[in-house]
Image (cartoon, rainbow, N blue to C red):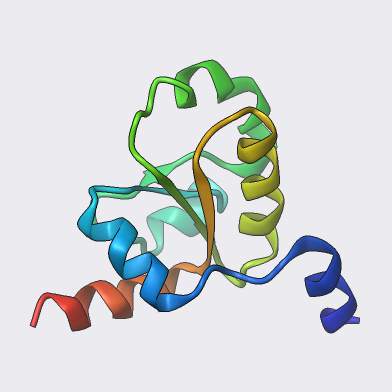
Length: 109
């Protein structure tokens, strides 16, 4: 079932691509619920819950940098990624927020 959903929704972007995007000043959008976000998140990330994303599109269109979308497992970020791309934004599916956080920590060493 999970492989079927990943096939439909797409895979997260490659780690090397994420590193390049982060060096370019990409904005990290976390689409988990506010409660999930409060329990832990990437420093500097912005919380736009998936169920509110469509209503925030005008605000998000003001972001000129690439957008990396994250969530808990990669499923919601994949859906959000598609919404943002359909709205004309440069967006990438970052997948699970913990993986991006580990990459940020590794690159800062």
